[in-house]
Length: 630
Ligand SMILES: Nc1ncnc2c1ncn2[C@@H]1O[C@H](COP(=O)(O)OP(=O)(O)O)[C@@H](O)[C@H]1O
Ligand SMILES: [Mg+2]
Image (cartoon, rainbow, N blue to C red; front, side, top):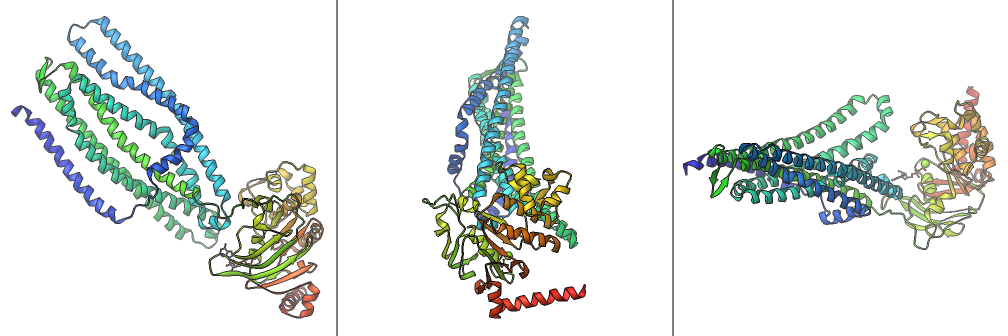
């Protein structure tokens, strides 16, 4: 019995650590139970949905698996080979047989390395393909969401979904899944090999297994929490960054740098703490597993070295020095995969969490979709009818209350009214950015809900106050990715709206670079570009929403004349604050709080001496004052 005393002491020390670990875990778990889990998709469902992306590449996966299995041979056979070498050395050093063994070892190693290389390359390729498929689907899906849905999600969140989260998933395909399979095989293989070599020693090693399982279970719980927190903090920082980098100029103008910096530091600190926690869990888990490993090796040496280099007996089995060497190598190959499995399981959990977030975006069904029998419109006259239209962005808060009007094809109609009266909303509803709650909107007599959205929008040209230019060239911003236009046509459109002068003065002409959001052009120049864009595409209905607000008087006169010309292209709906711009409209609609107060031509409305008349007089007087002041 005294013989086994050191083994018992080792057991007691480990037991002590284990108990401490359990207490720690219980303390953390109680807090954990209070928070509800944020996962609500079953692992099975996530796997099923993810496997759709992996299925096209099943051949590559099968090949990778085959390579993994071949490379296993080295892990399983090498300890036995080394043990054999040790015994031969101890016996009579037969050089020839030693050479054979060493060659076999080298061959196994080479084959295993080549297999691992090809497996890694193969999986990385497949992983990147899956990643790009997933990213593409996600981007396409986000593009199909309606304005209301897009308004509800911060851009930073979407960026995180398309980048970080898809990356976590690709890790799963390139690394985690295959290595998990590999580690399970190694674990089972090593166990089998150990049993074959010496079952008594195997039993001794297995005594450590329950502790290992316990540590692993606890580790999993702790890391899942840490991973979740890291993920939330990352999304938080991305959302904050994308919003505040877009608005950084405002921050500077209002001297809010310090305040914003403080916000950012708080978020950055949260992420740092979350990451530290994650590290901390690993920092405890890895040494614990290492401790078990070292203890079991020590036990092996204790038991095995009692016979020095002569054979000895343990629990009725003979232990040779070769057995000790072989077991020493097997033990490390036994503990490694368990530790790696635990960590990979966590990465899998993290990938699942990412997958769930991505699928949540996929599950946002586009709220505006084509009806099954929606029609394609090849040609549009541009006859528009609003029939008792009621609309609210938020349920109950009516923005339009029973708006009805008629715009005949090729007419020009102006919408006027104070800020917030619903002018932009009317224009937005026309392109079906939102669906109305009551009433009907007809284009050429067809309810726009019965028209394919893409077909509907193709016939509209929008010129808004905030022109959004994409980074690229002036040309790419005018043609908008359609390559059916010649340079001559583009220049013609530019001349039509008097944009040719400033573009002509640029070094690059049409090929001048446009920076993000077109920030290297003035607001007026951006508007001229958007006019050229519209004229080139010759839509049936043109929408101008305060589109002349940023243009100087001289250019506005030029624009006036081009607007006059543009009237020949099709129906035109104009929102303008300067009433002089819209005097010649065929119909002027005056809105107030989502209702039509007055409508008619400029002369008719002046004649009525209502609100329009008052508005006009106000502007007229201030204009004459301006002139006298000059
Ligand atoms: N995306 C939106 N979500 C919620 N409310 C909105 C949205 N856009 C506009 N509104 C509200 O609708 C009303 C009309 O806005 P709008 O049509 O833009 O007025 P304007 O006549 O100045 O163009 C405003 O009270 C505004 O607060
Ligand atoms: Mg508006």
